Length: 328
Image (cartoon, rainbow, N blue to C red; front, side, top):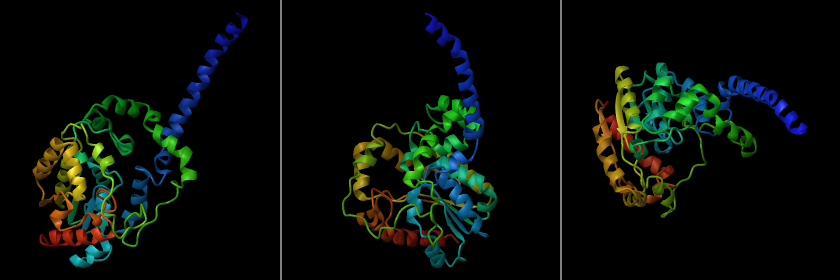
């Protein structure tokens, strides 16, 4: 009994110490910027790389690409400039790894003064933008305002609200990354390719004729169609139009075998996506080929399910040059 009394007597002091430590962590770690940017090769760290190493080095942008890593891998900025007879360093490819509508909106919003100088913005859309209840990613947890958290299109509003009030909850994945990033080399600054894109991976000239696409197809199995991140694409289009920027919405095609796997995994979502992407208003045009063969491309034009290899990027860069050049 005396031992139990001593333990109980010490408990409040332990609670106070824990509360103090949590408060210090909340104020100096969770509410700081460095916890999000320390790991450069991460969904949030890549934003800092773009904002510090890419965007500031462009003085007069002509064309800006926003979207996912598939957009990043699809368009070679320097080649597009030559094909469209544009000044050097005037095409910006700001595709983000795992980028969705909210991420493109926030990147533009945060760098609006510079990016609004562009004549044309090309906004990439993915099938994952059109799901009913998208899960908030790290960029949503870093950048979403209180209003955006309250209006999040899904069932994760409570978690987002908790993260707004208690930022430690929002940065829990970043903390885990902080512990392991040094030995994984993920805190090293991402290199910039000569054409101005983030060099996320080593270039591949062509992919294998067949790859395993079951993993990515399984990501949409049982997922309900909805507006999801498309509401943020709509908001981005509205913002761009307000700034006098002409807007194209595009879908980078995927391997034919991926398209078939998607259709087998969730035909309702595929049909919803293919219809809904045509419904964006206020844009100059929509270019949404579904599969590689619709542009005369082969499956080997992609190194995985749908990220263009170098050979595919050349085809797509020429395609977008023709598409955008016709409107100039």
